[in-house]
Length: 330
Image 1 (cartoon, rainbow, N blue to C red):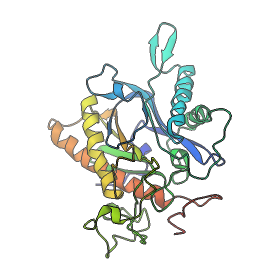
Image 2 (image 1 turned 90 degrees about the vertical axis):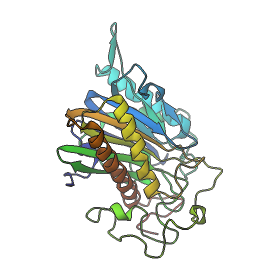
Image 3 (image 1 turned 180 degrees about the horizontal axis):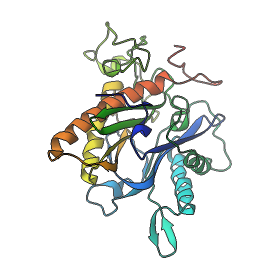
Image 4 (image 1 turned 30 degrees about the vertical axis):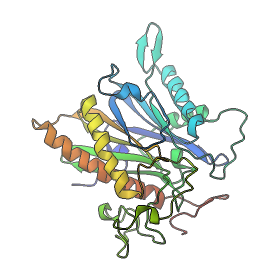
């Protein structure tokens, strides 16, 4: 399995990503889009999700092409970012045509970052403007860490962040993008080692390896987690340039959830809204044995997502007013 050039989800051919954030707000938005609509589905496994237009991504629903996906901070207020992206897409002539109007399809998901130390007393919801800005910034390269939807993210013990990773399966590329904001932790308590260490490639998040004194055999709640009265969430996108159907994108998103469980303890709690979008840009034909190849792609997507989670926390930078230390400062 070869490592693609940038180790970002934009190594998947056709994928563009843009970030926008407000340091004062300590929150932001990340947008994934493409020059042409793509196939997508979603799997929600957390107990407290916040979403827009995810029902239409079910395999039995009519819509089969999507113009953009949005990850946003701001809890329910952050869903407004999808409206900003949709408006920017409409002005650019993207979306399905209804008479003289273009109607973009822009599903999205939000995380809870309303208690992270940022100023939240806005007079007008800022997320619509952040969504438009993130869409305008969409490109084949982008920054991770304290950026976009991960700008104000927190884990149970450390600052969270925006992470990404990618891998190749023959001619097929698989990538992951994630805003890491879980109730749980990405490292064993009092350790700098990541739970995702067994999947690390080329020292991409410190090269420390697994913690020799800790393991998953202990009770998960023996590790520090965020205050349970809060609602957190890890929201992610996994993408491939393999030509998948909508139902196969759903299976991809389901398989990728394993990456959350490998990188965060505990995962998929009642207090998280853990969600994974799965998408295909439809460039590479699958071989005749589609099921076997799809299983392989799903396994790589899960590993890539685990790596992306660790990379997002590893890359977080310290800023004034932070409530938790960064990994590098802990």
